[in-house]
Each structure stands twice: as C-alpha cells, then as structure tokens.
Image (cartoon, rainbow, N blue to C red; front, side):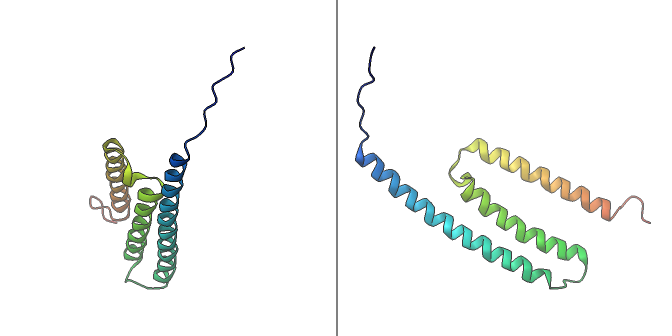
Length: 114
C-alpha cells in the first residue's frame, strides 16, 4: 500500500493568507457600518414627506440601490471579478430598470387615462 507523501504546508503561504483575510475583514466591517448607516437613513427618510408617494418610493429605491451596490461590490466580490460578471450585472441592472419602467407605466398609463 502506498502512503501519500508527507506534504507540510508552507508557513509563509499561510501568513500571506492570514494577512489578506485581515484586510478583507476590515473592508467587511466598513461596509457593514455603511449598511447600518444606510438603514438608519432609510428609516429617517421614511418619516419625511417628499410631496407624493411616488417620490417617497423613488427616494427609498435610490437609497436601497446604493446599499445593494455596496453588498454586490464587497460581500459578493464583484469589485474584483472579471469582465463577464460585469456584463451580467449590467444586463441585470438594465432588466431591473425596465421592470421599474413597466411598473411606472402601470401607475401612470399614458395610453388610456382614467
């Protein structure tokens, strides 16, 4: 029976890995604090009347979009990914905007006004 060779890990490799983890954890904590501040901003803005409900929803969606961009860029590692990921992300963003536009058209029907 053949025993696998004794492969001991390189300590320098693990030290570099630990250094990178510490750098990432710091970024995660910063983004976590930004997300908490964004949530507080969302709650604070929910008490502000911007004139009508559509404007209130637009402001809430803007704050949510900013928070989602932080989550996508940092927690989902999109800030360091390749070009294909960005193409898919851009397509998804365009698709979501199109769905928002359809929702707007459902609220304000330019063809048939009631």
